[in-house]
Structure formats: C-alpha cells, structure tokens
Image (cartoon, rainbow, N blue to C red):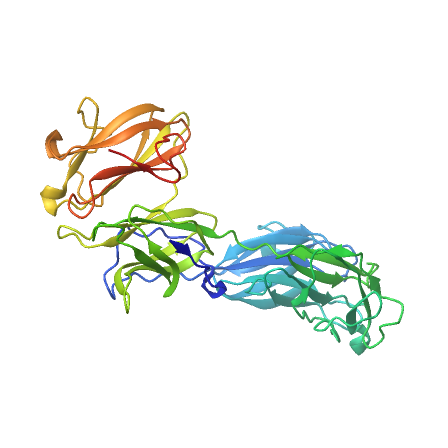
Length: 469
C-alpha cells in the first residue's frame, strides 16, 4: 500500500456542532445536507482612546446582544470561539459590563462583522486618536498554511500614532532592506502573509514609509521562526498615553481530524485491493483486505469518502458522506460485498472511553455470511453464554459495551450458539481503555476470522492488527 499526501485544498474546516453520521453508505442522491462549517472569531482591544480604559464587547447572536468579553484591557486578546457563519452586529462599551447591564448602556461603537464559513477572524477595535475614528476591523486569517520549510508573517497596523498619511509605515530589515509585501502600510491595513526564513534570527523594524534609514518608530526584537509557524504582529498604541508596541498573535489552527481506513470487505479473494478517495482525490492506493491505513489528517468539516476497485478506469465500490469533528479520531471500515450484502462504508468515531473503573468493548459484525436471519451472529463467552446481550446480531450491527476489566475468551456463533463458530483471540481488556472487536470474512472469498484494534494488550502478530481464529 502506498500512502499519498492529502492536498491542502482538501483540508476543509467545518461544523460547530459536529454530526456523526449513521453507519453505512448513503443512497445515491439521498444524502442528508451537511452542516455549514463554522467561523472562528477572536477579539483584540487595540484602541488607545481613553488610555488604558477597559471595554466590553458584545455580539448580537440570535437577536440577543451577548457579552463575549467584559473588562477587556488595552492590548488584550480574547481567544477564538466558534460562531455560525454570517453577519453580526458588534457593540463596544466602556468599562466592564455584565450581561444584565448591557440594555441600559450606550455603546462607544456600533459596527458589523461578516464571518465566513470555515475561516478564522480577528475583530480588532482600533482608532480613536489623531483623527482616526473608533472603528472595527475584521482581519481574516489565511486559509492556507505556509509552504513546507517556511514560516509566514502578517502585520496589522492598528496604531493611530499620527494623523492621516503620516501614520503610514514600512516594515524593513534592521539594515534597511525592504521586506516585500510589508511596505506602505496605512492605518487599518493588514497586509500579508509574507514568507519568512526559518531557523535564523530575523531582525525587523517599523519606520515611516519610504524612510528605511530613519530612526525606527518601533524596533522589533530579533525573532527566530520555526517551520510552519504563522505569526501576525498587531502594531498598536502610540496615542492616549499608550506606547507604540507590537503584539504577537500566533495562528491557532484547528486540530485536524484523524482518519484511518480499514478494509474488511471480502468482495474478492486474495489481497482484493482498493483505492481510497477523499472528495474525489485519491489518497490511498492498493489498500489490501484486512489492512489498516495510516492516519490521514483532515481538518474538520464535510467530506465524501469513497473506495474504488483498481482498473482502467477504477470502479467505485462504495461511498459515504461524513462530517468530521476537529481533534477526533475515526476509523472508516469497508464491509460487505459478498453473499448478497452490498459493500458499504461505516464511520466509527473513536470513543470517549469507558465509565470509571470499567473497560470498553466495541463490537462490529462485519462478516457478510448471508442476508437476513442467515447472516445473524451471537457473541458468546467460553461457556457459550451470550455475552453483553449481543444475540442475533444482523450484519452491520455495532455495539458498545462497558464491562469489567479483565481477560476474556469470546467467540462469534450462529444464532442460538450453533455454526459457524468463529473464535476470537484471548482479549485483555484493561480498565480505562477502549478496544474494538471485529468479525469479518464471508467463508468463501475470505476466511471467517476476528480482528482486534488496538492490539496493545493483545499481542498475537505485529501491529496494528490481531488476527483471531
């Protein structure tokens, strides 16, 4: 199997309220509408109007003016929060107000901010000195990360230190050399990002525009950037008794979802390889039967996952539309494809773990041995008693059991404990950990057998899988 890189344009972001879709392929043309990816928004108090006076920031959410930051100090930044995409009225008040005090207060500033789906924004409250009115600036972060082996820098000019064009600045190197893309920056602008070198000290200064040799308005300390780092510098102050200064705002990218693909579809004998596509771009090639892929990092949001049978051209075998949640792990299992049971994809989100002092066992019936009653299986212990209430499980059944930690010898049987008998490995289920037990195969193209993920406490063969039977 060869792992192919996921193109950056596939790294979508999404879903404020992430939806876990039903296991199984959705019928063609019958997919439920997927949630719109949310925006994220941070707030920076950058107005020197009123000196060091704090402010309260409210957004009108669902028709209600809602405090999102109270007593915000000059130079203070609120971290990102999720909001549905859309246009929001924004109100800025003097002081530190509670939600109840909003209705009787007069705002210093009323403005609107448009937040784009799947994008990150900083609402910057600036101006209020030297002829620049108090204003709200919406700075939208770059959608794409910097090129491999580089870092990026952006400058947000929010310092009303002089009137009109006299406030226009350049960002140059200490020796006066220009930094293309960061020249002739007027108040309220946020150019960039520009690419900067990594692993070496970069010494920059801010000067009046067109005057690289002039005494710097602000001499920035030398800075070493790491590969992949994304940094915005907000230049603020210079009026109202507030010194001119720069605030570093590191980019806080959303943690990706992590997706592995597990091939348990016995549609053919031998390796029965498949290709895997994400949003119509191939990301895995020749994933063999009974193999588990490496993790694919995907940013949260909606995706169409599909598997193809290799050929010229490849033939799509199954697809699934999913909504992935940031920071969560998923296994997409391909099951079925034999004995009259169609091949489909099943989404298995990583669980949050068992209750205290318990172990967790997830069971998936992925053995297409027959349709209807003929395909039902029981999960039984070594005494042939039904285990965890899992009797007469139809193909595709997923069960999540919280049980005592310990060592178990389980097996799958036909209804009532008869044939077929598919023994599982001896399972070591530690307290506080989650384990998934699969039964797979069709008895014709592929043998009936079990599989345990992860195999950390059930070592029978090499990682990542355990073959039972």
